Image (tube, rainbow, N blue to C red):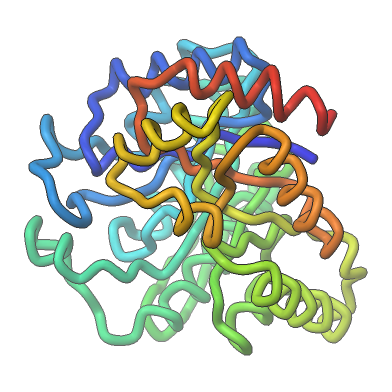
Length: 307
């Protein structure tokens, strides 16, 4: 079971804070550091000092970390043209020595688009499908060849399809709860399928849909990695769990019901339940980025029992 650290910087974090968390995650043996791709805080609070851009952040981290993998859950397709995104991700992959992964989603948070003047198209899923075709098509085009695409939303003519990533294949993550189109896209384009903040029952159903879609597409269902994103809040005793829950404005019992919360033993047991339904990777949503002791506890008391 791989454990990865997943952050939500739009809630209030600057680059130096993210760098500190990423380096701590690397030093503590976590598999990857991921971040969301949002420009507006959700819920109460001021979100100071303001948003940071996902791919600018990852470019910086690419040069200041050594081992840990870097990625997004999920890059918003509404924020970037697919040709530009292919260049950005390939460049950051080169800067990292081949440690980048691309989670790509349709985009959903209309308020942040209004706040920063970003178009919010009605038909987002069709655009996502074309974006996936273009990004992966550009990367797969041989050096010296050109790539063209004539879609409903995007057209490319004789692109040199450069630069190339450092990796022969940048892992692509697709995720979500959609029952039909999402599994189909995952079967066609994804190396990993991620379901965010879902119950065991819902996760098992969605993994089953993706496995069936992969088989229908002519792929072995086991070609894909299946993963969950879940909030984490653990402590060495009840008081520490309660303190950490209060720091992020959440109730302990609610966190236990909907995430990974409680003692390290309780969290290990629940992770085992997700492993039993086919999940092999957990993205641990960490909301208090100042609490590095939390990461150390997860590493020493939870990760150590899963590896």
